[in-house]
Image (cartoon, rainbow, N blue to C red; front, side):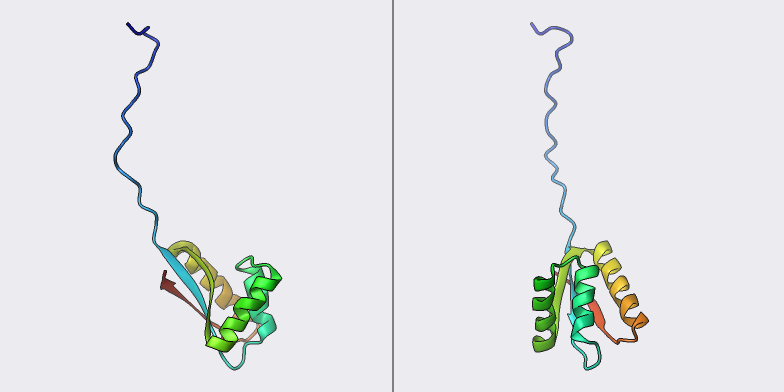
Length: 101
């Protein structure tokens, strides 16, 4: 017989919480935004180390598009807004979009 203070294990819930969908933040190449500015955005907004930021910037430059990061929708939206604001402040037409991962 169990002492009254002993607790019986509670059955674990069978429900699994679903992971939120993820979204890629994409940077698009243009003829006006400087490579240095793209590297600066990748380092400051996306917290990339300089060598990784340069790799992504080169992808944008050579392939026309590059993945800056993969996030939940709300975080991706915030990163796009911050990137766009920085670009407009410097008068660059840098296009930053979101795509389902």
